[in-house]
Amino acid sequence: MNKEQIAQMIDISAVRADSTWDEIEQILEATKKYPFICVFTMPSMIDRIKDTVKSLPKTGVGGIVGFPSGGDTTSMKVNQAKELVAVGCDEVDMVLNIGKLKSGFYDEVKNDILAVKEAVAPLPLKVIIEVCLLTDDQIAKASEIVRDCGVAFLKTGTGWAGATTMHHIDIIKQTVGDTIPLKVAGGVRDLNTLLEMKAKGVSRFGIGYKSAIQIMEQCEEA
Image 1 (cartoon, rainbow, N blue to C red):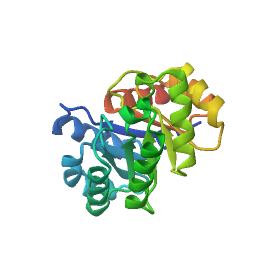
Image 2 (spheres, one colour):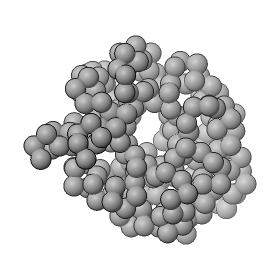
Image 3 (cartoon, helix red, strand yellow):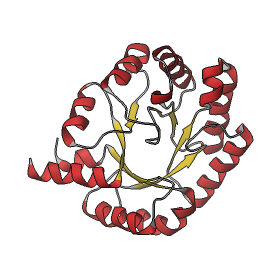
Image 4 (cartoon, rainbow, N blue to C red):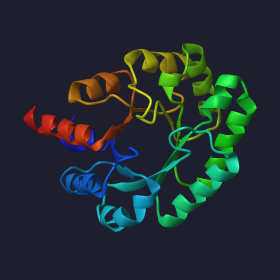
């Protein structure tokens, strides 16, 4: 794979609670050099980035819903989603209701996802299951629910709760195979890890801006 193909697998992000404008400016400069597929910031920063990102032909603007806990009401998530669409997002990543999943309220988890999916249509929706907070059985159940909702991607985490491991990927792949594309976020900090995960069937990565830039620099050195 060449560096452009690698960049087109990466959603570069600054979505920590303390992410600053200086950090986001570094993302914008990096994205002019490397064609990352999408830029994610906290929603309050989208107005500041969208004109620059929209001027880049291979990069979209991403928005986050129910981040990072997933515990908002469905109506709150739907309103967040509609606002992200209105402000010009190209893709939306939502956190499923982790507490309800762990409580066994599976129909409510599914309906929550479907409501947001409808709110953002026809934009692609990625659903975060936050693997680091789940048991293996819960990861499998969450994967089944997300697949059955017919969304664009199953996403492993927010990056807030810890790192996605090869074991997590194995559980998801054993459960849903290739029936839904997989996005990994959390703990991908170097090119070797990215390539190992790609070999397991991961097709998209959410990576913090420092690690994303470092990975692209490693591509240039390879």
